[in-house]
Image (cartoon, rainbow, N blue to C red; front, side, top):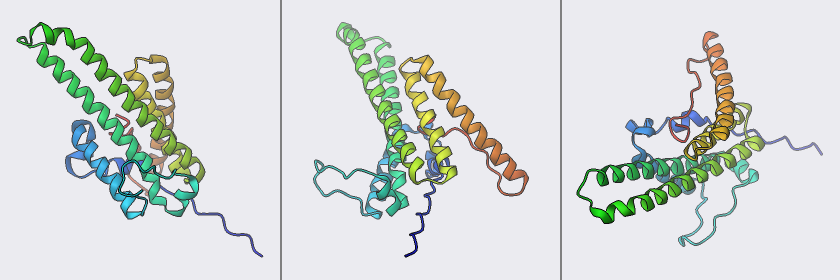
Length: 219
């Protein structure tokens, strides 16, 4: 009996997927709340199309996303990517709201109570932002680990760079400059290699786009 052929690797163009958001959402750093909602809709659509919904109850646990599950339908690989992007957008939206609240409070007329509550509100907002960025990093690392098993070479490289970039954003927000520098160096090296490869392909007539850090979870 002939041995079964190994499964074909899964391809996910991560940067292109992030940049494929319609209209102004192609620049998610300018529209965090709208981009968050777009990611939520995209997640729901992928689950519906791939029949990966988990019932009507919000308390029903989702089955784990394993390499075997992704091999059965490669479109599911986009789930951890969109989860990371949604968490990042939520964090940036919360950060903007906190900054706006501080600006409003600093404009005068807030009263002593508002002034006294400002440090507590700022601390709460910071915890929320860091929590969401930690979730984005966890999802990016899940994407990275899945790609390492089921992805093709290009997808693995993009996933490695994306995970490092998202982690760098998290560590910057946490004021962990050493950790941020390590992740930024990793991301810079990997994106540099992809940019060089893309430039070489373009020179040979095989393409015209260079890799760049993502506009969503990466920046």
